Length: 274
Image: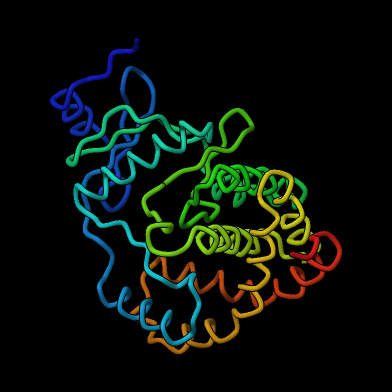
């Protein structure tokens, strides 16, 4: 059995690590890269209030807040979810050390968003994103949900995807079916940034049922059809209220207004009626 350092040893690794952003550090342990997370505050109460209010006004379950509690409880939540996903055979980073004060995981490979930004080849991009979609399908087939599967929440190791940043548990805030549809909804919209052709987005949606429940596709279609009022609501908010994650989400929602025609066509051709 591999020996992992005790807390005091990890503090030494942290002291030599490079701060990346918001409590996240990149370090080296026994010659290999590790990632260290320290407790951080929960997201802004202002955004949570707006998000919850929009969910009540627009009756869209995907808007219900599913925020990490922050602090030590947030690190424990993520560690538990990493262990849960790993037990189901889902590729996630290995947890090396987990306490309310620190979460250490083994490096999972190259970040998908950076790979996509470096590759102008649409065929390469589609191949990588298709693998990410199929991995998400396996997550859903195991009865789990991610919460925020943008391209940056995947890594690639030896040509295969690994799921990152299990910081939120949306199934604790909404029905699992809604959480899973939101997962696919967000991943498709994140992919739209890198795949401007609608035929490629349609190919991604068609790849999902190869490993995931077809019902999630149908639920995602319904979400896409209702996206208009939500996008209008968010676009009217003052820009200074919108943090980084919210801006990313807004860009995703704009993309999904374009995706509505794609998912309708895919539903008609490939997804059997409920």
